[in-house]
Length: 152
Image (cartoon, rainbow, N blue to C red; front, side, top):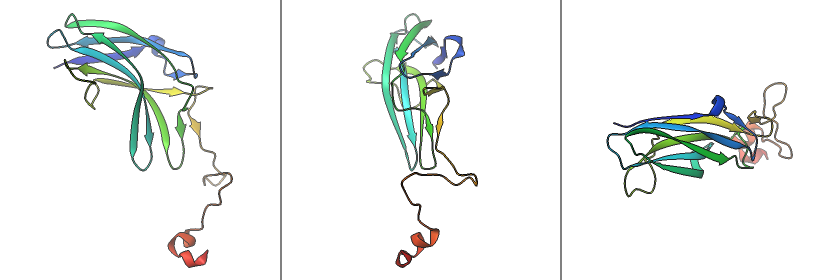
């Protein structure tokens, strides 16, 4: 069984677009030879889930217990975002890539959620004082309009 531990320098999890994202990955694998892959990914969560790896770095897992460094530049977009209909979340993932495989399996060995935005905070969809979402330029339909289209 392989063990992977991922960390950023200073434990940093908030990054400005274009800023360096750097850290170390430590591993213990059963035998030398596989590679360790560190990926920078974003997830769009809404009606489903879409995951995109935008950067990756591979290290040879020799010896069986070891470590290595990684460094990416944070992309300029998309920002970390939380809205009513969908959210965009960023993460660093690390996992073991078996010999001959294109990438590690869907389940990474370690994950660090991170935020990418100009001020380091997740961008949030604006809401009205009563908590209803404010979507500029779009008139939200009355619930009755959705149930009974003849009311339009």
